[in-house]
Length: 225
Image 1: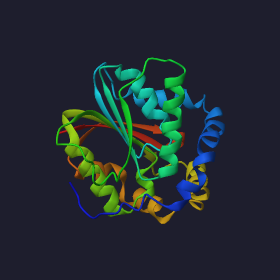
Image 2: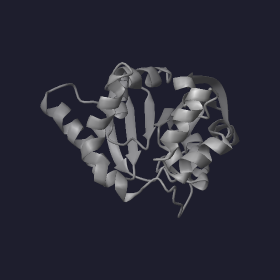
Image 3: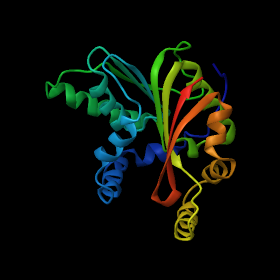
Image 4: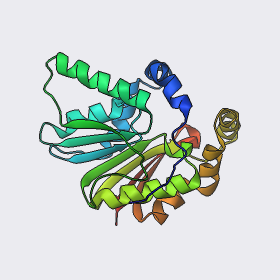
């Protein structure tokens, strides 16, 4: 495990927007077929089976983790980790709501933890996922996070990443530059360095790259070598 590291992912802004995050994502996702449909498209690439142990790194408000909990069933385990207490409070509130509705409880937990220092043993998880979080981290944080996920993932375990890419088309490049005006330097750094390269350098084998929105976003499917 890494010690005394900081990914740069935690910023007070995440605590401030926690109450607004889900409505905003739902509104944006509406134009692309709906939030659950988009998330399921990403999560289906994990090929989750009943009984799997799955890590949701930088889980935010827990929407994807809760979907994965449905997929692993009562015999599986989903662990969502994030550094924002307010985001995690939303996640836990959703879990309580599910329990009160008498829906069959899932083996799921949410932990306030740094993705660079995951408190699980080597080769623990069958699958791992992280979406739209790596671009919020400084380079060192991304490297440490990817290495930690590699460490806790079982050999041949599947790792799915969704994040920004470097678009090729003229219109997509123009739109991306506008969008980057509201992003931090860490996002631009990730795009310039190449997320694919960082994933490979962490020891993963890239199995598939799915390009979205003209190259503005990408989904990377990798396995632990």
